[in-house]
Length: 152
Image 1 (tube, one colour):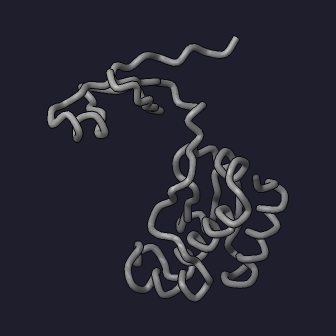
Image 2 (image 1 turned 60 degrees about the vertical axis):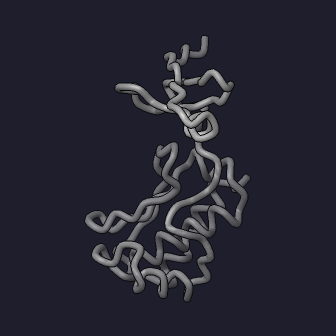
């Protein structure tokens, strides 16, 4: 698990090294998204929930991902210019992270008849299918949702 104080030091060092002084860093409260580059505020942020549970390498890769976005600008997305900049920084990941999310913060818990657990952070609307069960059963297997009880 990464220490948040150390993550801040890395982020500020990367910003000083690759961006100008108008850029800043902060932690945010995202539970699924690892990082964000806010071009309007010139701020890079990392989820404090995910940084606290991921190892140092994963958090460092997230920082490199976001620094690359800041370097190439808002129009580049995850296209060739961003991929080149990210590779030059030493980024080895993809467009999205594959790491654990802060599922314990989800307000909705779901379970399918096959026993697969699902989480949602917003109230489910409509019907949802368990992909794993539906694929193997070749029919839609519906998830049943319940609101998470607040911790006492």
